[in-house]
Length: 517
Image (cartoon, rainbow, N blue to C red; front, side):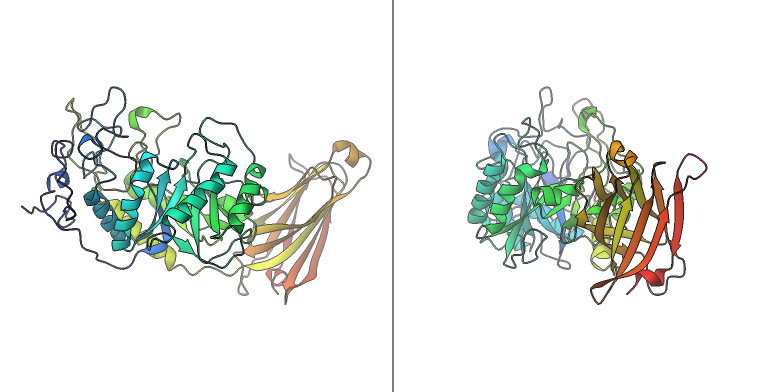
């Protein structure tokens, strides 16, 4: 018997592949979709082709007794599915199994509707429960023309050396599959133009969950080996500190998610990424943690406003993302999912699960499609290369732009060996030296190549630079533009005075025309 779902999503059906319809766990849930497994046809492959520049984190870790012999990830001590699950929301498909072809098919159909072309599967090591779902997911994803990447989690035993083995295994096991996500794009640390997989590495600050804390350099030898392997791969690290790109030779960085209620400036870390590094911002619709179990507060969805703001801020830094990652499709425990939910589900105590009211339970699919379309159709502003040198005899000095432009993609040309801090971070260039050296009149300098954003030949207002320093010595700033790729000096200014007030700062407006070639 065929029945229309309450979500207006068309007919949901089983794969005609010999799997028996799921019962008990799904048929006893409150979900109307989960009671429609009698049909033996897949959701159709419809709509425009999804974008392979949109990646969504996908969790293949759910199981139920009917398909997997036991409950996985829906349960917890004292929580008995299917009526009670480890989420404050209830899925439209019920307490499903991630290895069910019917479920995977519907997920892929929903991803097409959302315009998302790449699933990043949570992967907890070879022969893990999550990997048992991978082959079926790739097969179904190929039917719906969805690509599949892998999100390497900090499973017990993960290490830098093991990462080399893991990626060799994943490339050998799945690399020839038509749904395996590949790119010929390069990065700062991988200039190989061959087709290669893209992998995400969660929490590289530890070798494994509960293991020792590690630095960026811990991964460098492993990533060099991964880049040099045949086939080669790209590894995007879960970090927002740009120093991990050159410290660990990561190909790019992603943030997974931000729980900031005021999202302004949340993605400014992108401006510090060096040239050639992938900027992969992660946006999420909100976070509602199961049983208030997280050590941080929820992030309310605010009827979709949180999602819209995160998209806007992630794309508004002046740095063009190679990919945008979405957190998540189905992380129900943390309440970040865009997967449709059941609107009238109740638990065994008669308490209602949360909903998106007044939004429809499938609303985030269409909102995602709109945001993805806007992203892929964005005309990115031109950026203009330049060079900056800061020389100071103070113990500390900073340089920032207060109006008229922004800057990004810094790359160190030279720095004095005696400098303690010398870098661009969060829109500010820092340069420091030991106090005793400054008292002795010593000088340190830093030269950076970078790019100006937010300016054009039509710009009318000047670009205002601000020098701030301690009360010792002086700071001189020299600016070059890049004319036909050759640095041409265009400005030079010095601050050696003491300003009134709490900040020892001076401002220098520079015409935009001086910064353009």
